[in-house]
Amino acid sequence: METLSLYRLHQYISRVIALNFDDSLYVTAEILQARKVRGHIYLELAEKGSDEDILAQASAVLWKTQLALITPKLSQDPIDILREGHEVRLKVNVDFHPRYGLKLIVQEIDEAYSEGKLLQKKQAIIQRLMQESLWQRNRQAAAPLVFQNIAIISSKTAAGYSDFMDQLYTNEPGYQFKTVLFPASMQGEMTGPEVTLAMENILMDRFSFDCIVLIRGGGAKADLHDFDHYGIAKAISLCPLPVLSGIGHQTDESIADLSAFLSFKTPTAVAEFLIYRMLEFESRLQDIHLKINQEAGRISQQETLMLQSSYQKIRMTALQSLAQHQHDLQRTQQNLRTSSTSLVHTAQEEIIQLESKIDQSDPEVILKRGFSITIQNNRLIRQMEDLHPMAEISTVLSDGVIKSKMVPSDSDRVSTK
Image 1: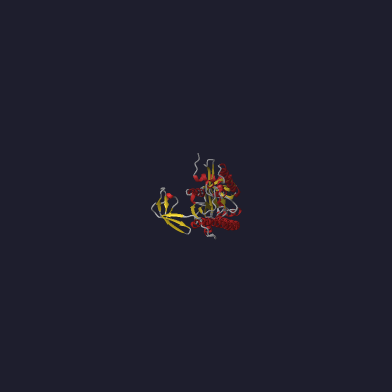
Image 2: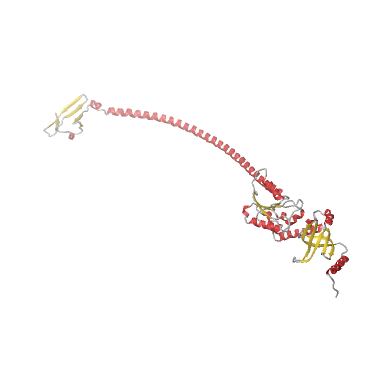
C-alpha cells in the first residue's frame, strides 16, 4: 500500500477539487460566526439538522476586493446580511489549500434568499404566538389616562435613548415625568435575552410604572431582525403594562413592534406621544372645567330666575295676605267700634236702671215714704228678739231721730218709752 505525505495528500485533494469544482456554485447554510478583519469578512458556515445538531461545517471568506464589487448590488451592507443566525445563499468557489485546508471563497450574496428566510422565520414566530393565544395581547392592556411613570428598556449609550430623554424632559408645556432605565443590548445575539430579562425586572415592581418604553437608536435595517425574537414577543404579550416601542424602521416593523401596545418609528416619536397624551389629558380637563363652569352658570342663572320668580310670588302673596289682613283688621275695628258703642249704650242703660234702683233703695227715699229705721248699739234691728232690754234704741225718721228705751208692760211684752 502506497504511503503519502500529508502535503502530497492535500495536493491530491486540491487537484480533485479543482477538477470537480472548476465553476462557482451556490450553497445554503446558516452563519455561525461572522467577523470583519482588515476589510475581509470571515465566516463560519454550518448546516443543522432538525434537532439543531450540526451536520456539516465549513469556513468561508469574502475578500475585500470582491466585497467592493458586490456591495453596490445590494440594498444593505453585506455585513448586515451575513449576521450570526441568518440563513444565506452564497455563490462560492471551492478552494482547498494544502496548508489552510478547505475554504469557500464568496463571490455573490443572494440577498432575496436571506430576506425570504428572515420573512419565513418572522412568519413562523407570529404563527407560534397565534397558536399560543399570545399574538398582540398587549394591545388589550389597561392603559392609564396619562403615562407619567415610565420604565425604559434601552442601551444607556444609545443615541436614541439620549434623544428620547431630551425630548421628554425639555417639553414646552413643562410636564413632569419619572423614568427608570433598565439597560439591555439593542443589537446582536444578546438582544433577545437581555430585553426579556429587563422586562422581568420591571414587572417585579410593576405597580411603580404606567408603561414600558422599548427604544433603540438609529441603526441598519438588519438590526431590526434582532427584535424578530420569540422571547421578546412573548414577554411583551404577557406584560400587564402597555409597551410602547420605538425600535422600528421607516418602512419595516419587527415582531416586537407588532406585539406592542403602540409602536413608533423613532424614540423621539415615542416621547412626543407621551407629551401629547399629557397635553390631550390637560385639554380634556380644561374642557371638563369649561363645561362645569358653563353648567354651573346655567344652573345658577336658572336658580336665580326661579328665586326671582319665587320672590315675586312670595311678595305678591304677602301683599295680598297683608291687604286681606288689613281689610279684616279694618272690619274687625269697625265691628269693635259698633260692638263697643252698643255695649256702652247697654251699659249706660243698665247703669241708669241700677242708679234708679239704687235711688229707690236710698234710705232717705224710703224714710220719706213713711218708713223708719230702728238702730240699737249701731246694729240694724229687724225683729223684736234682736233688741237688748237695757240698751237705748234710736228710731230714724225722715226728719229726725227718736231716742227710746224699753220698759216692761203688764202684758209681758216689751214696749218703748
